[in-house]
Amino acid sequence: MRAAGLIVAQALSMLRKMVEPGITTKELDAVAENHIRKSGAYPTFKGYRGFPASICASVNDEVVHGIPSQRKLQEGDIIKIDCGATLNGYVGDAAISVGVGAVSSEVGQLMQTTQESLFKAMEKMVDGNRLHDVSFAVQEYCETRGYSIVREYCGHGIGQRMHEDPQVPNYGIPGTGKRLQVGWVLAVEPMVNLGVQHVKTLADKWTVVTMDGKPSSHFEHTIAVTSDGPVVLTALEDGTVRL
Ligand code: MG
Ligand code: MG
Picture 1 (cartoon, rainbow, N blue to C red):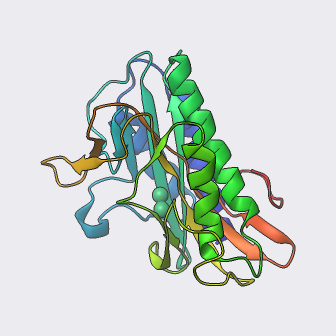
Picture 2 (picture 1 turned 135 degrees about the horizontal axis):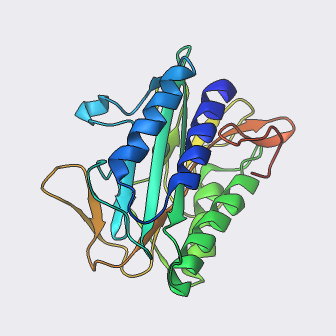
């Protein structure tokens, strides 16, 4: 899973550097697919329930599952790139939010808070903790800063399939839920809105947008519970706890 996760990390790192005004989300998708296939892996998203691309590219009010297109990114946009790779039967899944050029300070803070909430969740991924300790860490960190948590979509167990049990909501009551054990691997993925929490799906049956049209942010890592603490399997560098 680390090998699969590293390919995802490399793809996202390449895409992050390419994000600039004028580039299309389809161009980003092509680079991701090429890197994944060149690495001997398969782009997990492609064909998943009919999804047509190797990344999800969601811009501004698009929360998740945006389909890469000829849309050109513009200065001030926020793009969420979600990517998965399957290598030797194991899956890595991660997502980043990237500002296009200079973004407003409120969008910058939204992104920073979302990423920090993922760190907070990760710190709870310790043997013996409860699942909703992880969930609550995201919720508390974001809601106390005035943001809202998307409820309709959540993180998930991951392994030989991208989506395995259990579901990992980004909200919950601490001290409840299944007990985490060494060997568990979860994809934790806070989806955090600047405005209302409510979302809807567009007519393409994929793209999820905020109800009020305000921006949304998304970060994700595939994280293992080990006897040495949490290990990020979709980080660029090896190590425990920190990205
Ligand atoms: Mg993902
Ligand atoms: Mg995921």
